Length: 363
Image 1: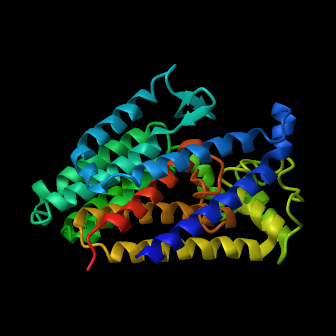
Image 2: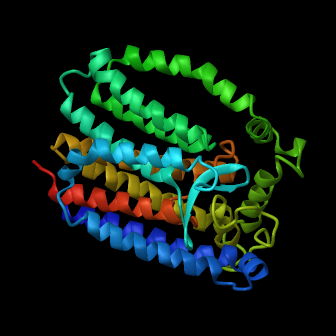
């Protein structure tokens, strides 16, 4: 188990280091033009990395089982924050979305905390109610209600990508726990028309789907991001244009240091660079699932499973969006993309996973 912890830690640190280098490369021109400081985003990102390491060591220092005692209050606090962020004057609005609290130089996204809080609550619930999971009222409805409240509040921001990611993770946790498949199937079937309405009744979401199917139908509008992302990846060829030599970051590709940093990696370091990132995440998933498989403590098992699923899903979606395999979603690439609360919570999740691997009951 010690070797698994070391491997997971090394992989995470490598991804974070790649993120530091690529964030500076992808954002320096934009930072210089907008803030007259080429290292503006790099400095802020390093602060987030430092905060992340401090909190990671903190969550590794206590028995993770104590989280069971605060799972309900923690989820309640997260739900309250999701409500407060919707209040004008409290939540910060960017591009029509109200998803952030601004605390000095730090922006905090409560949906990130809500995701972790819900995973902790679900893991605790599946531990306490392991003999009642087949019962609709006692074993299925409570976690679905907790997920429902969280997802509705996240959708109100609006943030469909995070809501979908959280829903999928919770459904997979319930499936692995042995919840009645008829109950899961009923909700999935009923969710299809709702998802259709959520996507096609909102113009910008509908435009994303259309641009995903044919980005060249509107190359200067809804298809612009996808086209520029693919241009970046194609321009890099096998070995890339060289670190710092991206052309798409020169105000062609929006969100170059956040949602589309994977495209800049492909342009500057080439196909080999992107494959290295894919390989690192595959190793991360394998090591994470190996840790989970060795845990006998039920709470630790489901908490670790939820964490690995969430980080894996975010990575797959981000890379899928950048390559045009998936419709555009605003999910950052874990450990690499610029983003305060997202990076910090991802690092905290790794700290919890390492804690579980050290403190859990093993055969």
